[in-house]
Amino acid sequence: MNALLGGLAGLLIGGAAAGVVVGLLPLDMFSFAPPIAIQGFLFLLFGYTGMAIGAARGERFSLSSLRAAWAEGGQKQNFKILDTSVIIDGRIADVCETGFLDGTLVVPQFVLRELQYIADSQDSLKRNRGRKGLDILQRIKKGPEVKVLISEADFPEIKDVDMKLIELAKQLGGKIITNDFNLNKVAELRGVQVLNINSLANSLKPVVLPGESMKVFILKEGKEANQGVGYLDDGTMVVVDNAKRHIGRNIEITVTSVLQTTAGKMFFGKSDTADEATPIDQRPRRTGA
Image (cartoon, rainbow, N blue to C red; front, side):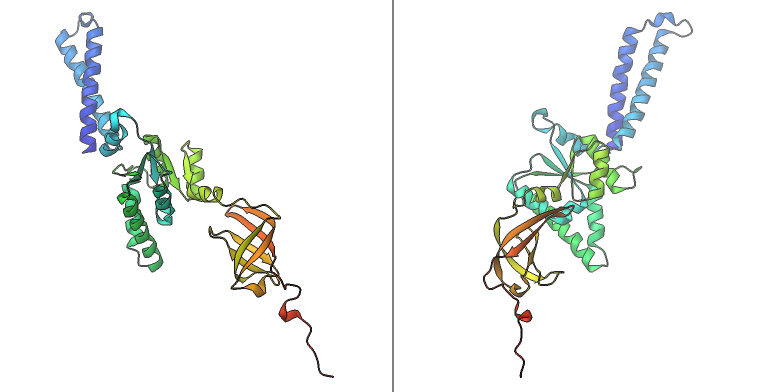
C-alpha cells in the first residue's frame, strides 16, 4: 500500500516536472520528431522516473507516520521512538505519567515483533520480561499524558533492530529513548539524539556530600570486616563501616565519601548509632582460672 501511494505521488510530481520542462523548452528546435511526440516522450520519461522513485521511497515510509507528522494544523510532531530495552524496563510509563514527556511516542512494528518473540520464549524469565513489556505499552497507551503511534515503517534491507531504530529516527527527525549503552553511542555517532532513562535516573538521585547524615536500612553484610550494606529508595548502594551488627535495622550514618561509577553513585559512611565501640563477637571473654 505504501509503495502504491508512493508511486502515485511520484507519478504526479514527475508529470508536473515534465510540464515545467515542456513549457520552458523550445520544442521546435528538435527537427527529428514532431513537438507532440517530444512532449509525450518527456511526460513518459519524467512520469516513469517519478513513479519508480516514489514506489521505492514509499516502501520505507509509513502513511500513518506521515499523517501524524503534519497533524494539528501542519505542525510537525515531536517524535520519541521507544526501543525494546526501555519498554521492558518499565520506568518510561512512570515518566509519562508525570507529564515530563511531550510529543508523540513512536513504537515501531519491528520492536513489537521483538517483544512478542520474547514473550513467547520457552525461558520463563524472558517470557515474563516480554509480557511485562507488552503490559507497559498498554499502560502508556491507555494514559492521557502522551500520544502513542504504532509505526508500520520497516527497512527490509536493514537486518539489525538498532540500525532500524536509528534510520527511523533520522527519517522522522525524532529522538530515541533507550537504556541500551551501545545503541546510545552508535545513535549519537550517527547524529541521532538519545534520551537515556538511566542517565535521567542518575541525575535525579539526591546530592549528598561527605559529612552529611542520613538514615539507611542495613540489609546485609559487606565485603570487608564488620561492614554493613544498605540501599536508598532509589537503589543507591550505601556501604557502612562497623554496621554488621545493625543488619535488619534503620540507623543514622555520616557519609564519608561518594564514589561515582558508570552504573551510578555509591555512598560510603560510618554508623552514628550509639554503642558501637566494640562488636559483640570481638569483646574479650572471661576465662576460668
